[in-house]
Amino acid sequence: MAAFPDHPLHGLTRILVIPASPNFGGYLLYSALLISVLLPAYRFVVRDYHDFLSLGPGGTPSTFAGYLRVSCLRLFAIKDPFTPPVATPATLPTDGYLLRLPMRRGPRPKVAGIAPHRQLNQKGTPQLHQAMRDALHSLAAIYPTRLREGKSCFEKHGLALFMASCLELEAPTVTSHAGLNHINAQKEPFLTPTHLNPTCADTAEICHLHASESSMHLTLHPSDAALVIAHGWGERHPLAGRLIFGKRIVPSGFVMVYAPQDETHVGILLEIVRAGGWWVGGVGLGKGERGVGVLTRGERWL
Image 1 (cartoon, rainbow, N blue to C red):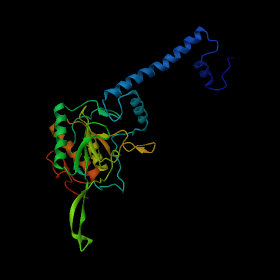
Image 2: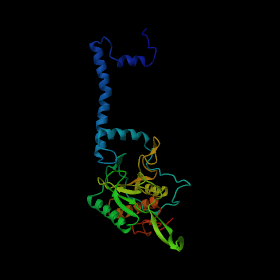
Image 3: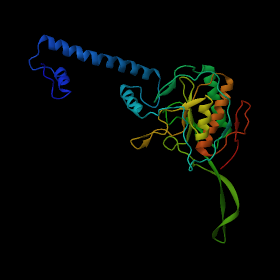
Image 4: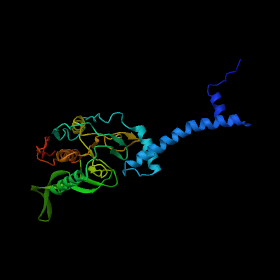
């Protein structure tokens, strides 16, 4: 009767280790085993690496080292990008900005990646991409004391909007009388460079636009994120709110909003950007009904 190995892995070890005095049959068996294991793995890595490169530039370098980093980050991805973040008693502002949002027609686009995180289909046309850029430029021009444009902190490139001065306060005017300073009863408004909810490295980034397919990333109040997701306009980033070795890569309300498919979408997406300003700075960047089926809280200060 054939003897069985003392340990279940003992027999496998005998196969994997080259025998001290190998024969031709042993070499063939060993080589076939290696090929059957390594060749599919090699093909998967090559295909997956090219898929990573096809997403274009993003927050991770388009190198093999960058690919390995993203591959490790996949282990921490959230299970369902369509489950919104949850508000807590400490959430400020206490309410979201969006009161009504129309349903987005048609199926959701296919989305892939982590960094970069991009749409694979339903990409915006060059004309719609320019319309979205123009809308962001116009919004920054309307509120020059609250908004500034710049390069995305998350992506390290691309157009982004930041909250420049977020909370309007009242400061007492200090005057001098008989050599003594005293506080004047009359107060004048001023703007402080603080913001309510930090985003990327405490930069108060509201949103950034992707040049490759015209989608955007932005951070929203939990209730606004829930409305955007439920009505088909976007989904959460795979790493939204996840702690990786004690560090939060992106905020819990970090959402991708899909690329515009027509001019009406541009107007709706701009209202979602205003909602991002509400979350980051606690200020309204609009006047309520926008004529595109969106109702917001408008100019409401904390």
